[in-house]
Amino acid sequence: MSGDRYAPTREDRFTFGLWTVGNVGRDPFGEPTRPTLDPVDTVHALSDLGAWGVNFHDDDLVPRGAPAAERDRIVRRFREALDATGMVVPMATTNLFADPAFKDGAFTSADARVRAYALQKTMRAMDLGVELGARTYVFWGGREGSEVDGAGKLLDGLGWYRDALNYLADYAEAQGYDLRFALEPKPNEPRGDLFLPTVGSLLGFIATLDRPERFGVNPEFAHEAMAGLSFPHALAQAIDAGKLFHVDLNDQKMARFDQDLRFGAENAKTALFTVALLEKRYDGPKHFDAHALRTEDARGVWAFAAGCMRTYKILAEKARRLEEDDELRQAIAAYRMPDAELEGLMRFSPENASALKDRSLPLDELRTRGPGLERIDQMVTEVLLGVR
Ligand code: GLT
Ligand code: MN
Ligand code: MN
Image (cartoon, protein in one colour):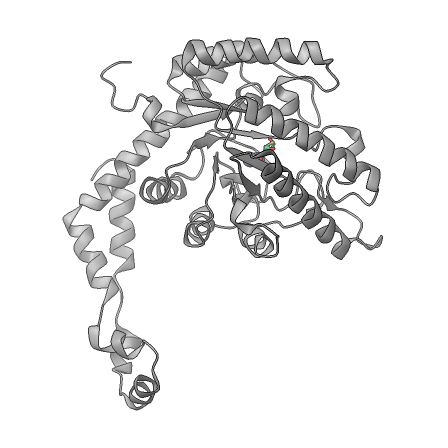
């Protein structure tokens, strides 16, 4: 693939989770269609494809309940694979959703013993992540939610969630861990309603934590799409707040089950604007939180992984082309209509307010002028379709 300008390089900082390429194709109706992958083989295969790093949940690497000696052996083998390939572990996370103990929530369980188990498991998982070099720690509250609201934990659930995150931030501080926390929203699935379902909800919640500076968000393309929301809009809000700590890229049809499709597979234009924003305003890992279709064998899995990265790079090239397109630039300049004098009056002072109140504005023109968005969008569409 050398000479291929879409071939991924380490500088692209593409990452995959062990659980992504390692997805065995199980779904609520059917059994696995692929064998389990050895994490060491995964590191080598991803490295060969040009990925930069690999992320994991505690249980993806060390099976739950493994004795200490077994844990050490697994970690040693994994580290050898990282050293041999130069692959890094930029992010780690905790599996707080698979164990049946978490069936009614982990940090938000009404049972204090479950909440204690969730904290214990997370502290151990943070130790493991930091040991392997992680600088970002993701929290996806897969079981933090409900189907039944009659049991009265709507407010308590949020309080317990806050207590847990404050505790873990204190733990990171006490351990001297150089870790930032990235909270990941999702509207539903596996719970009927998940708590803190959108990027905006989490940004509001972070402001109520004891150490808000340690916390940001990890928006996922598919999670916004499931709710019919716009991923680039969510990203923009996270960037505006200085809180885009990590990103999960994939694709999804709206209002369906969580598909975790190959990046760019479904909503090419939304993916283009996603890449355009990330290329300009984000320099963290670009993590593909997706998996191959259940129909696929091992070859399909690696084709899926290569496809995510390749599509990202194609879209990055398209985003650059949009910026360099003179006609498009002119159309955007005409759309924006700056007005230095009015913009001066829109900076508040009592004098400006009084002048602005008396100012006559060309309302007839404002009501009738077309901003030219159809032309702009057609130009973008033609760049995307490869004819411009
Ligand atoms: C799970 C989920 C993802 C989360 C992962 C991190 S696990 O696959 O669907 O969105 O990012 O816990
Ligand atoms: Mn995700
Ligand atoms: Mn998902």
